[in-house]
Length: 197
Image (cartoon, rainbow, N blue to C red; front, side):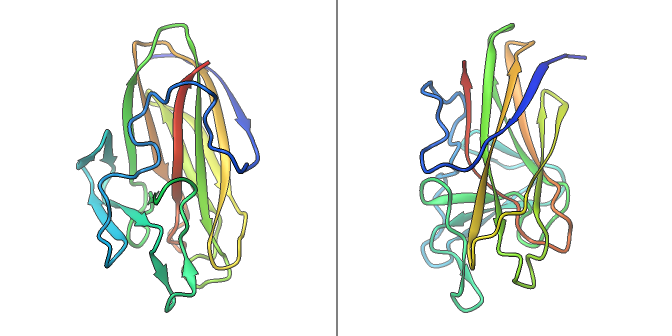
């Protein structure tokens, strides 16, 4: 069993990108590839599929969501935190414990920061009545379930989280798992960054 020395830090959403000034060790942390179709602004990626460094885990699917995607006749928006796309880890209609993972090269004994934004849709809409929740797993060890209950009228509200850890292996797998209750259909993920301190 691999062990980590971890500290979980919660930070408030800021207007700047989540970068700590270093290089992001993860590929496509803002889920910009593949581009979603202009006409639908939504792309479903099934379990076991790989897209630009990310592998879909669990049983179900995730959804790549373009900035132009809307629901409720255009009244409800899904604005990404960074770039032109985000990921809905809950999938097309909350698929349960589905997720995404990526492995990055790390140095044993070195300190790292994992930064990510969790998106919650306006709870006043029928399909989104509960807070978004996501579990973070580093090399098979859960770092806890993170919750966002923030609300922006008719759009996604983003909340920033930071996890600091010391690598115990020369490769580290980061996994995000949907833990949003099934009655809610949003578990937004965007602006994911893994950087050496």
